[in-house]
Image 1 (cartoon, rainbow, N blue to C red):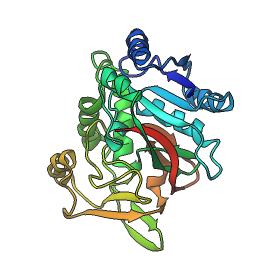
Image 2: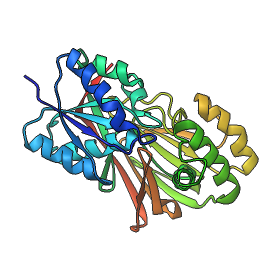
Image 3: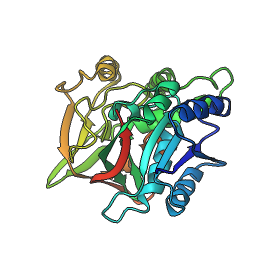
Image 4: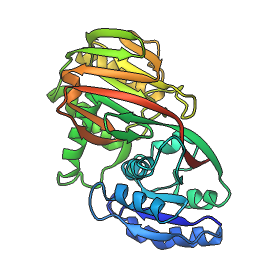
Length: 304
């Protein structure tokens, strides 16, 4: 019989996760699932809780939070990875964006997700790694990272503290566009090829969506053994504004200054490689380079 550990982030979304816990536990019990609950107390705590859960013999780990919580749980699970998947990941989405749900065809509604867990099929998916950090959905650098920085700042501003997901990210896009507009020359090595060009941003995707709803890599599939990589070259402010509606719908593919690649390994060198966003969380870097690697079929998830 499966043993379930539920790792809950009380600060996820707008901070009302604790009030949802009785609803979640009731829905799970109706499906025959009675998990042991652990709460995160600080950033990266879910990594340690997931590590310990596997060590304690829990075979299914439920991440109750947003994509950041899921990322931490995945990093805890992957710390046990030595060629064979350890543990199964389940998602109870209570964050602002919940973009990973789109990658595994999973409900973004809390009640629906809980009801689905009891009968969900396990699916073996790929996991990405950027330097020393694993990611399950999308990691990238450049414009989108600066947007993430601005989004964090805006969440601390009076009147904007309850803003989450797509509306927050979109507002941060406009702020970034007019305050932090830089396009450095970047060296991108993808598998055995090299690209050197001014680069607005690069997104290395295992799933199709990020930022609460931007379809950055509409063809990405989480179990095909390859990253889908979106590289945006030189674009002026007007060009970015024109491209933005297309990125929302996934119709930017094939547009001028947008290059879509598929690769298993991507290396990034230049000024872009100072900070990344990894499943929506900031990942500072002082090495001067990023290396993205794919680990095919390395994690079991409960999926739609």
